[in-house]
Length: 231
Image 1 (cartoon, rainbow, N blue to C red):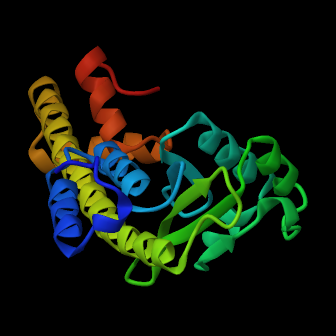
Image 2: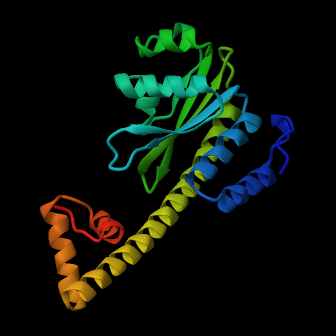
Image 3: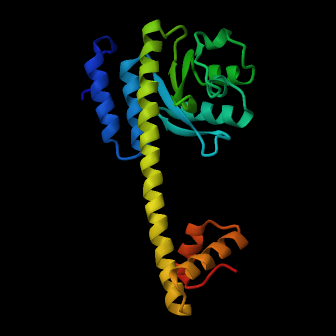
């Protein structure tokens, strides 16, 4: 898909191609990079970014950016717990038509003005009513985003939500398979060394995991690498 066309020629077929591109992305990082790059051409923005809800839902983490200024503003808001990104993480779409005159976030506003941001749009990423992140569009000019731009942002957010959830699920499955392999190898070592059966070997690994407050996978990894269990 070529992303050189102006925004007004983007139609349903372009978004269908975009969805396929997300489907073919190799992982979460590649998925997010495709989202922000598409946003630059599909909507009237000069910068774009995606922030993801971290594991456990306690905070946000930078997922993808098209300019360092986006990461700077993301990290600033995450640190102070204030700003349109933080508000959007609660599930609200946040529009900032003119950053210079919007005083809803007194700490964020001067930082955004200093960074050369004129307007901003933040759309939550949702999967089954759960907030998984935020898609952010920025323009150096005020009042840059139209109703059409907001509609495009919502379409992008929906595609991104599903793609990120799928990519994360695939990563989790791969990690689970890897963990099972490691535990199986560690059990084999214990069974051979101490003449244990499978249940006994697994019980040993689990006990060391609980006693040392270490993930079972990490206990297995250490045993495989050092031939020793954690102290």
